[in-house]
Image (tube, rainbow, N blue to C red; front, side, top):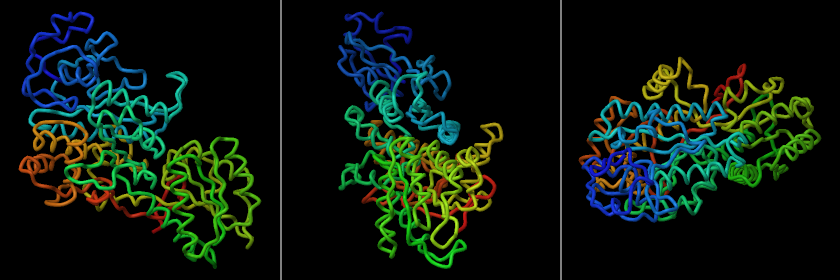
Length: 506
């Protein structure tokens, strides 16, 4: 929050008269962190935008319809914070660097990602933050819930992002996870006007590759980042695996039906990559069965049962749709047999590689299932992942975070925001905004190696203070961003199911 010496935090906008608002006020040296403002003196004037209020008064101040700054109240979707009493005690957290967070809290995997991000902020704060500035977050849930409002998930993501970046003036948002949600949020005109950075831990669609300008640079970095590799790689791996003679078959899979979410960045994007790669390797044009709702999904499952294909590929980022497919396949005796009198293979993608999804699905088809995902690190071999697993377990009642996909990516995304904020404050004249955080993210892929562990925070921070780049290694793997595309690569593995746990094959 901004520390304002002229007014007490007890003043609300309806208590501040116009004469008071025209008095000069002084910002303490520790202020200016909630929005894109500098650490300078300012004068309170009639407000026209929310950013004017957050610049002048700090975290959580917005411009009301009367042209007065007042404390913005949390929405029903955005009540959770770290620290827990952030809204109630804004004056106590005037020096806090606050980020936004968008997750679907009805999904246990998203909850794990949210908790992983909070862990990173807590660890960075415990290690001293940046020159006395610790880290916090406002967590919004974006599921479709009529108990909250009548919004769809995509609309809830956009509305919550506007609240975080526009109303509260936060410089960066972690999430959403799904590619379609991320695309809608990032392309929202109102959000773009704030200049906020968006970093997703799990949005892998190739459709997101081109949303930032093609000519990114240190001076003009992109504002859409992710800590997971693009599905341009996953689609190629799926096609390659199908054309490999393995999995009990004596010939390559050449005939495939693809059931995929339509009008969806993830479903459409991954299907397009797969179809192109599969045909390039000698496969037939896949039988495409797109769906946009439950009725169409059920119809696609019924259709797939009667098709003379070797394999059925299912692509969706939504847990409920994945469970519906697996349960539907079971009801259709796992979608019937192939022309060679073998059971049809069922191929899933990274979004399905969750115990939370598989545990809630019928198990009879599991022997026929394999899928792809970003290869998780081995807690016995990788010190960053091992530290993350242990710290998460300690903070969350012994829970094993290894069962949740992309939780490690969310942890890394939060740490990257921490490092990006450090670069902005230490090297960009104290101006904390999306662009300056992005400039910091362009400096985490070369230089001295830094493991994303709490004990290495000071070393990384001081390298930034000196203007040096660093090469960070996260809990999800090496975070080596291509300077021309601001994308990372990653190892994709094929997995099968043991019990209800996804197990890597190779």
